[in-house]
Image (tube, helix red, strand yellow):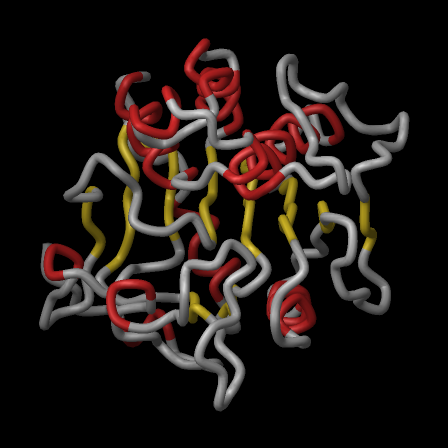
Length: 261
C-alpha cells in the first residue's frame, strides 16, 4: 500500500512534542512530511516545509490568508497540508494527516492496512479515540463514529478521493467549524474546529468515519505541563485526552481477537 503522510506543526509552550510524534510515526515505517508554521521546533531528519511555500508544493488554496507572521493557523494548515499531500503523492492509496502532539503505538500500520477501504462507505479512519461517553466500550471493538463532528483530528487516515471531495467543497473557503466563526471577524489564521468541519463535510459526501474503542494514539502532554496547546485550548485532559490508550508496544491482534461488534 502506498501512503502519503503529513504532520501539521506549530510552536508550542513546551518543547519535544513534534519529536515524539515523528519518532512514533517512524516506528511504524511512516516517514512524515512536516508542514510547520514559522517558529516550530526542528526535528532531526524530518522534512519541514514552512510558509514560504517551496515550488514543489501545491499552490496555496484560493482565499487562504497567512497571518502577518506567515502562519496559516490550525484550520488552514490542515487543509493545505491535505492539498499538498494529494499533489505530492498522486498515487497514494491512503493519506494519513497527524497533528504534532500525537504519539502512536507500535505496530498499528501493519494491523490497519488490511482493513482500509474494505467497507465501501468508509471514507476515513481515526486512530485516535477521544475520551467521550459514546466512544467507550468494555470490549475492544470497531465502530462507526457516533458523532457527526469528529472529536479530535490528531490522526486521521483518509481515502484520497474522499479527501479531494472535501477540499473541492465551497465550505472550505468559509474558514470555520461553526457558523459563529464563519460570520465573525476573527482572523482566518485564528479559526479553530477543523475536526468539526471535517466531520460535517465527510458526512455530506455520503461517507462515514470509523474508529476503535481503544485509542492507538495518545494526546501527548509533557510531564508537569498544564497547557501545551498551540491554539490556546488548554491541557490535553478530560474530553481532550484519549480513551483507553493501548500503550506504546501493544499486542493489537490479541487485543482485538475477540472484539464485540
